[in-house]
Length: 280
Image 1 (tube, rainbow, N blue to C red):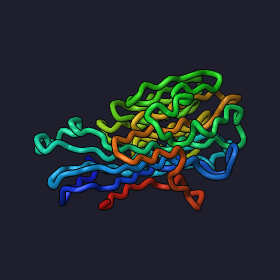
Image 2 (cartoon, one colour; image 1 turned 60 degrees about the horizontal axis):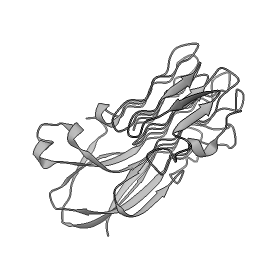
Image 3 (cartoon, rainbow, N blue to C red; image 1 turned 180 degrees about the vertical axis):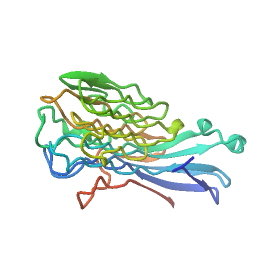
């Protein structure tokens, strides 16, 4: 599948795997200038020679800065995934049989400065350090409320919200706009493609690869991850960040840092995530 990489473990020993989710799109918005970063997740893993790892690195969400409303249509960042693929099912190409080792959630899109900005809950926009979005963010409210289920795609609520982030077991819910629609990000088993944003005025507001949700005129997209980030907004009074994607870690000596991922140095979109595997 496009965007998925395979790595054959060369020797039996402990390895350190570090994953960071993609940054959500956003430049010049509520509570800060720049996108909202994804999670930083790290752990130690005992792997055997011949094990097959499947790797997908999340990319940053697109911006919506150039539209005439200077609004909220920023895409969510994609999650970064490492899973173990059983050798018995490798030849069949069935990626559904892979089991996750570590996932770093992507950051949600940042809302713009002109519309809404009254539901700004910055910590919920960060890529989360836990699968459930750090509990308070699993149910995300902004005039309306949406509740995600662990390991599933995010949910949406409101009248003009962005697309939600994709999760391990499902796609993010689609958003809604007054002019064109915006799509939720695809989940792990469905290709992890970022959701298309609405094309009323711009075309660079897509969610990042790794399940990032597309941005809509009323609200930004959610981040992809083990659990997809929610997206809640209502035109034009109520908007906040897209919810950050949840993370997952089965390793030892864990580091699970919400919002610890990379940040972009320019306004061209969110920073891409990364995955590093090193001998312990």
